[in-house]
Length: 412
Length: 90
Image: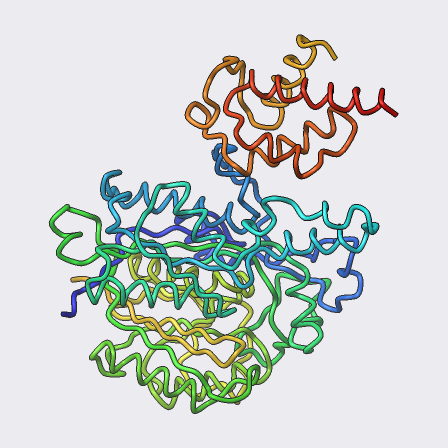
């Protein structure tokens, strides 16, 4: 049995704002969320890249201590967007706790801030007190499914839990596996998303691979530059995104506000290198997504590219888009605004795409001034355009050779 | 410490660390305030700070059945007396 799946609520905390109004405003005005990397008194001074997609505004959390005690920063983000999505969905309390609602949520590796604190304490410890430096809740804060289960605890959700930890495809998988859970009748609804916290170790990882942007350290707003001739790498960022997926008939009957339909999802692996982008793997993913959605490539009006602004990644992705979609759909690289929000990027970019579908505009790829000729075979967006988007593809790729595509359709 | 001092210190810990204001001495902490096993471990750390010495595993296990502020005060009193007796024996 295959059922239709729709999105009935969405919210995000991003470097360009919290919630729909601020985020759309930033997209319309071309506002960047990239700021200087903060001094962390540990490794930041050794990192060559001095930029970060930062959530630097206050968030008014209203969580009780009973919940806060097992929450690291990524769980604060996750629970906040989950709370907003639950409120927005209008789902009644008895449904939320009925077992018919599940959660698919993740972060790249639990809470790196908590892990760092554990190691900091251990390395500073003596033989006598090393054991005691490990706190009772350190594991609960840093385990890979910490975001998902802090959400289930806070809201009393008793359905299935899926917690992908596949780096940059974490939350596109959350939405994809949530979609499959509802599509195949395992849950009536799924709360899906991802979150990651401010963390310099992640920057160091990419910096060591020489994949981070370094040429715009004194001018953060002009990086990253997806598909641009002067792009010089990605910018690590923080944030969270969540969507509520529901079975279409259930949502329609209860009069829910239907924002879009999830019509397809595909995920595959390159079956080889864990880092290098792979044209065959990515091309296959995009084709599998179209097959899953039972649509033609011409049906897709907009592609939200993964486009991290690395030298090779953007070229391979442009080639794959061209192979599968030709020059038909508009292509936007939303990381130009926010940087790479890691586990959250698939959900955040899906939500931004949703906002553009709803409002009938396509934001330009920020900082795309001169298209790299090796990326020029697709239809880039360099200034804001008013254009109806009926069907959109959201592409994400991760370390480990994991590729995903989500296909969203506006309901007529 | 006198019993009154112990009660005052324990109530301070509950207000400061667990955001529990003026708990009743015989309130069931789990039922009334959602006080769980994680809180119990954190409370033991606070009690160690209050007493100025580390509790043994056996002493900590004794605390796992505690349900009320009154019982916590009994526990602190008992531990203090044991330590004082041991110190006296030496």
